[in-house]
Length: 435
Figure (tube, rainbow, N blue to C red):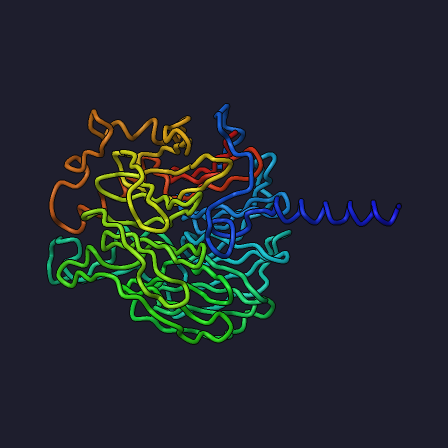
């Protein structure tokens, strides 16, 4: 009888460990589901704590063993105590850290704009190894977004993210601005394989059943054998050779029920067969980018678009529209779902909790910088007054305008739900814990 109870306790404990696993990589797991087995925050009470960096927090948090890991454009990766928000350590790189970290077996993996991919000891922040890529860069094109001077190659100021790693079978996978998808041994940092695309890879890899799925700015979604790097198939999206506006996969794919879902700057959300790469359906936003990563839950796919700002729910099997929510501003942050509530961030510095049953907002949180700065750049209806921040059709004006938007506390980071707390970064440099 004692052995029976001991076996039961061990089994029960194993189940708890499985169901309450820490969200230790981008979107919570290798499939990028964005669905968290957590209570969440159906009713917002307060900011539990706020941790301030010296840059913008575009990176999304990862949590493991009581510690939350987050990058900042101040060139540091931070380790922060989950309970208190106190800093445990920080690791300095030589470039902005806008890759979301992954934590596995006591090691934190992440990339930096300095062109290196890092592995550091999770407990101490000591360097384990670093891997040098061919160098980071943003997506670039001539006459970008129809801006002047037309003959100049311009880096895209809306290319905010770096590829975030996924860890599987003693290998860490990530994309790079040099156009490669890399597979590197977790223990040694040695190259296992690399796959060359034809442009920047800032999409993040999703892995399911031994296959890696990732998008490139070259307009293709790729399916690769995760063990060898061999190409299984590729899927072509739209192009925009004149002004390079509606082209490129900035979104990261999610894999669910044999289907790969991903957004594209060609103004579509796609659903393709995971085995064959054949298109199942697409949903058109009629001219608006889909930069965030979708979340699949309860037979629906949830995602946001840029301009005009909307958040959509479509049928996962057909792509038919279920409902839309007018956000008024762009949605770059990828949504999270926990306990029937969906959470997503927007460019006006707000995090919205949406009840999926009623399809109505439960509450809205606003970053400190948004409260202070967003009214100065917005219209009365809550939309962005682009005329006040981008006065001319010159490239430099757009760069300045994007900086003004970020200074208003925009949320580009994706929320993570653990227990009854939500963790989210803001362009005001803060990491917020909300309960």
